[in-house]
Length: 255
Image (cartoon, rainbow, N blue to C red; front, side):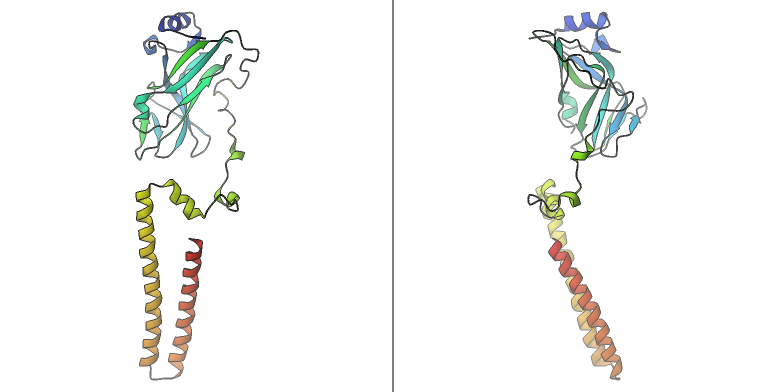
């Protein structure tokens, strides 16, 4: 197996092979830098195709997972495999690393999946370099070259939503804790600590309200001159405090 040099990549592109809609200036010593095209998908918000303009670019919100569709269209020969890796400049600003490949026989625009792991909004201009691709020759042609969906013209590849589950669907799994516990696991330790402290203070406030209601009941009963009024007041306040107490107990149990 041998990897294409810049000379070999250029020769292929000059013959309208390997990479279409390309730019010779994107060729590296042994790779080609793929550019951002005019569409992308935000998988966090759905599977709809989103348009990219020169003025807007791609908007990747914090925590969102997207599919970036390349400007270039590939024509991978049946005796070649192409490997796609991250651009360090994008990884350094918070995008998750990319590691994928295009099979022998693949034809079409490439979809690159990445996620914004930072707390900043990331905008990628149209035409920006988004990944590197290199090409290696196989010892012989593949017997079963890629015959799947070519490009994004109809839709992106089938996303296996059946593998995704909500918390309610897997809550009985013994490997899964409460929803709050699972939320704590994916948050930074410092953030989790702050949230727990705030919840403790919230509980203290709730129980303080509970105690205030009890004291209010006793005060009203002792100050009233009529017998019926304190009795009614006591009954109503006791009912309200019991309801509040049960509510707080349920909250504590869920945590």
